[in-house]
Image (tube, rainbow, N blue to C red; front, side, top):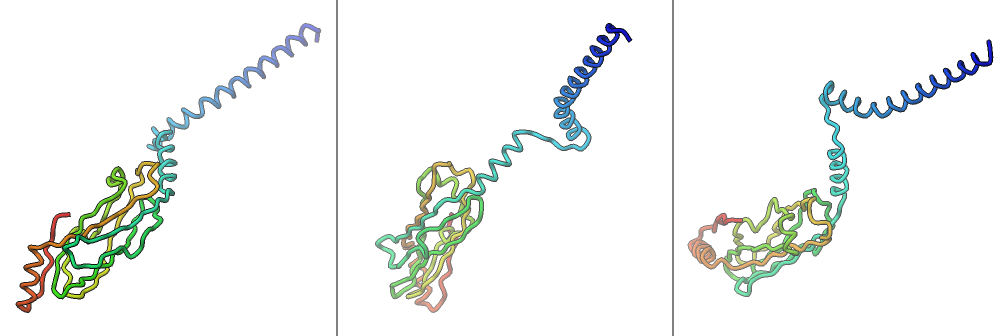
Length: 199
């Protein structure tokens, strides 16, 4: 074999190696779209980058913890003691929680009260969801009666990130009309019923 044949053979081998390396490089880039096509067309699986990132963001949001503070009071016309059973709670967004408020009728006759809730800061109110609340109905307490009243709630994971603390507050007002009926029913020896009011 001559020197020229050797050089051609080396050059040919080198070109083949470069071609193989280039083909392998191109094939590695083609794998991603080929994999996507195979998943979507053959197996019906959609692989969207946004969906994966959305799941990751949802996982981060679900791990978020905020402080919920509880407050309560009564209007001066309502002869009740009323207060939260606990002052605050650490809650994980997206999960259900329950707390209670304590009420006692300190008068000598039945009294009906209606609670008005408020959430602070105001922009957090749309993200604080009460699934059960004594504020959904008027509450009748007989003379001297005490009651623990439950509140079940969920904090929406989409609560703005800069809101770290939410305050849930209730003010109880005397319902004069329903109280008069309850007093009349008690005087007649009947039992007062608790009519349903609007949330």
